[in-house]
Length: 212
Image (cartoon, rainbow, N blue to C red):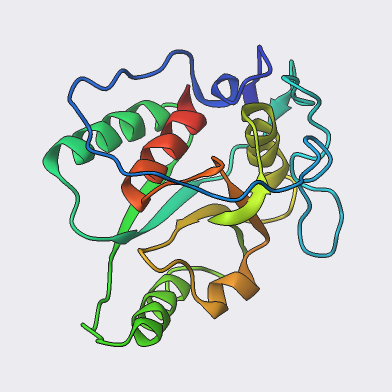
């Protein structure tokens, strides 16, 4: 059980944040704007407004309460990470593990070296689905997902512990996005930015939101 002293997502896992000490090369493209109402827009399948639906601007409903922290598994599809990126990820995970179990799983992009894009996405999709259990609470990070802020992210993590799930799985797709099976299986689809982030940058943003 974890006591939440303040409304930010970091209040679930720990104070402070990491500073990036080396330059990152990053290419971002702008998505078309989406009309999403801020707090009540986070809805899971079945349309009960969970998780994160109660977040008012900057406020988390779990402030001052104890919550059940599920083990977290982060599934990332992509190429081999650079040493610098992996050092950052490992540092975040080391700090997060003081508060909950965190498992970082890398899935190789295009695992069967398919030449066709659809076949590549299907192969990645199958690899991801093989790692998801029936009792996982699955959150898919997607550029067309619902907008989410830090307070809503805190509620998402807290609400996941009330679903009866045994683990929170956060899925980051490869260069061509997620496959059909994961899209049908996901309990929730979110986006961390109105910008399109490659999977490595999305991973760093996600880790920061879980910890900072």
